[in-house]
Length: 352
Image 1 (cartoon, rainbow, N blue to C red):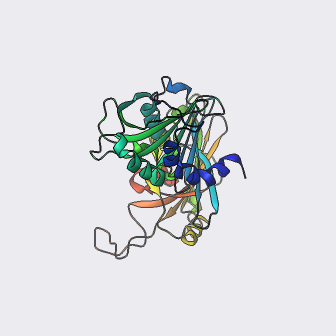
Image 2: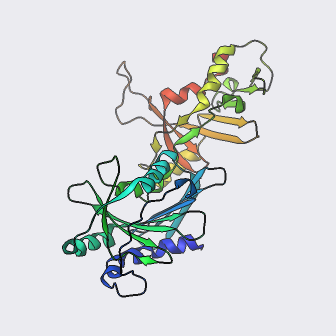
């Protein structure tokens, strides 16, 4: 078991002691003065963000040397078993929101002494620990994030700086240009932090080939090849070149892969139901290969309709007309919208 998992197991004990840390201000770990420098002046130096909740959930976000963010999640079951998943691509919009918060956070007011006990009681029960790393193995700052203020315009926070200790005072924090609380920006739900990206080729010239398989109708399958100069070729299910085809239709197909996202994770099915779908024969399989030879393969599966669902003519249907399932990163069953993804799974006859 690695160090991050061990830390996840004990994070409940760490945060449950938050009130005690401040009550016992004479210990060596708590300063006799307040710390107020919550903000990070240069967020481009932030290399890692670790967030833990009192329920045992945690997310570990890391920036690669190329600037890409990944997320690793961990959570604890009621029996104490710790699970870990990832790393996965992180949702960049949420990472950017966290970095923006690190930069623009500001002190609004100290927590009144009369309110401290209640604030720390709630923090120990529902608080979050946010470790901010700036290139080293130790965090440069640790935020303890509590609940929102009664007027919902501020957030209770406590600062710790390794090497100095914990602040003797908690504060009501806000952010310039923003009215509201900040605690919702630091949830430890893995699904929230995972990227919804399925295909992302902003420069479609980087797409070397697109292969679409129709397992239930093999003759409808095809492969499109694109040279570095943009020349297109179409091949049928047997690998034979198609001499005449609709060039505009093929170009439009490749353009669809610029930025495609799934709608959400499938969490309503049982584990058995989810596994049954993922191990069944896909309705479609899409395989994209880029210029570096990296392959992104995504299988798609039909989704059952809601009970009693009908088409426009009032007839009962045997599959959902609006959504289907897909498996991303070989592990997760997600929902995708058909009006977007049907465009990338045509039959070869649609391209002739």
